[in-house]
Image (cartoon, rainbow, N blue to C red; front, top):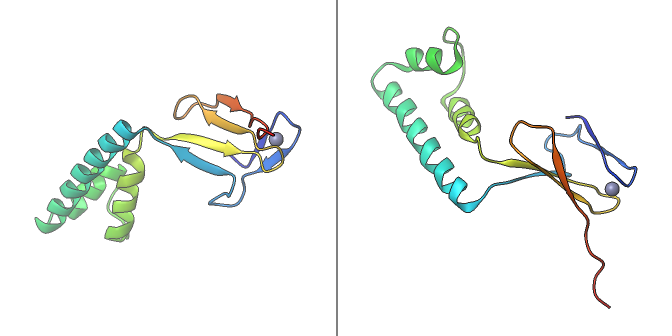
Amino acid sequence: MPKFGCRCGHTISLVAAPSPHEASLISAPDFDELCNRRTAAVDAFLAAVRNGKRDDWVTDFYGRPPFDISDGSVIDDIITREDVFSLQITNCPECGRLYRQRKQGVNEWDCFVPEPAPE
Ligand SMILES: [Zn+2]
């Protein structure tokens, strides 16, 4: 997503990666589940490496013949793919509004406006 239109009229540039205007949100129970899932997936990959089945594992995971990719990059891809929980947060640097994605993979957002500080 290269840009995001805020209700204040500001266009938030999201070209930089990582963007200083984006974050993610995950509940504590979902984070626990994510940790369990990614640990199991990393364990399965490492077991395949130990057992000489790395190429088969890479083929299954990526759906293509084995290619040159480091173990660290595979593990990073596992961690990314296992996160089916996190919601995107976008923050407007002009007005402070926060936009929370309603559901992962869906371009629908709830908007939150900061309250003025009490006097
Ligand atoms: Zn704004």
